Image (cartoon, rainbow, N blue to C red; front, side, top):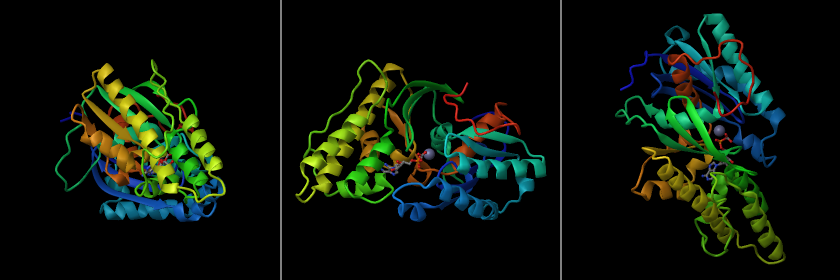
Length: 340
Ligand code: KG4
Ligand code: ZN
């Protein structure tokens, strides 16, 4: 058990196309979480339309916060601090959440804690539902694989809020590669889930797509793989596209590299466990690869905590608050990472 001071955090997350709020106790116990997705609206454009996203956040932010407090049967008087995603993300989206959080902090006198979205994805591994058996606390040193729409990286954590970025993608993020390949294959937005679905009917060995191992580094690269898929699509032009086989072979290449490099890093740095976070950690074959190996304890959050949510922001916010690493009301949208 941690001996940090108990605290209830209200968190707000609006970095991309999800308006989210959550109330979390002591960094881990989730009392309520709301995610208002704009997915259907952006699907029409084949991707996130930033101006539309900020306008939707403006409409949704207050109802989402009110609904979350109501679900937790709490009012702002029962909250100890407000946490908010300060970046990285779409500036127009971040500003809506930041201003809501600052407004609440100024109006109530509660402390304000700025959280980096990426550390939020990592801290989703700490969260469990109130009413559930307490989940074992992640043990340091741990290897965190962060796989989202904008990032793909390996971070070694030797303690709370202590991130050593070992390597990252040199070009596309893994989620971005899923989204772009989905578009090439004529599959709907968001790309990750639709590639996964199409791949269920396909043969992952049908196409021999390249894996960029980048040996001797902990970096990743997915642009060569993306180009290889595009070349196949062009070569097959005029014929019925084997979408399922292409999707399955692409997905297998991504999973292969993410899984094997993370395992190597965990061994090399003698990690006690592996954490996988970010939207791509919702991917079924990726989850299966980690969950079927026996060498390391693995913590991959349930699906609703993999994609963007505020529970993860509340968890990182709690540790910042309890350990005295909060930024206060002066915080601005600053996408700096890793954090010092
Ligand atoms: O973490 P997230 O919700 O937002 C960012 O911080 O970027 O991640 C979104 C990314 C998108 O690229 C989406 O296609 C991908 O996560 N994703 C998936 C799956 N679900 C979401 N990728 C592969 N398989 C999935 N099941
Ligand atoms: Zn995210």
